[in-house]
Image (cartoon, rainbow, N blue to C red; front, side, top):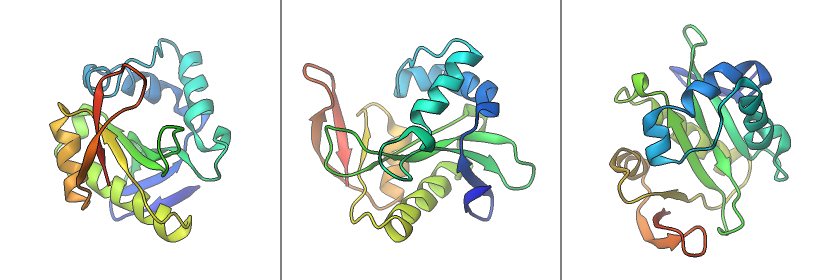
Length: 166
């Protein structure tokens, strides 16, 4: 069942049956370069990721990653969702699309729908985003969503600096 639907995208909770897509997405070179290596190497690992990053396991209601697929044929193209990290006061939006779906406006469409859902339906008053300074594509998506660079932060002590958008 879809939680959110746009003109082109269906956004729903991830399920164990999404394991092959998650395995593939999380091992794309761009995912490793821009988000990081999550050490997902098998279908079992992918199901573990789904269970820990998906909605069902998140301690905050309705926060977690959603599966994004095309409305026309239900083909999964990425993930998008709201996460609550200990280092941040507000939920932050995250997204990743399979490289073959880049440049078609899907990231903006999915992120806008998830942000609107978080603000209007879940009652969040503020949503932020974190990305590396070298991830130009994500920065452009965040700016098109109306988010602006607030400051540089470190998500872990001694870790690399990241851009906090709000």
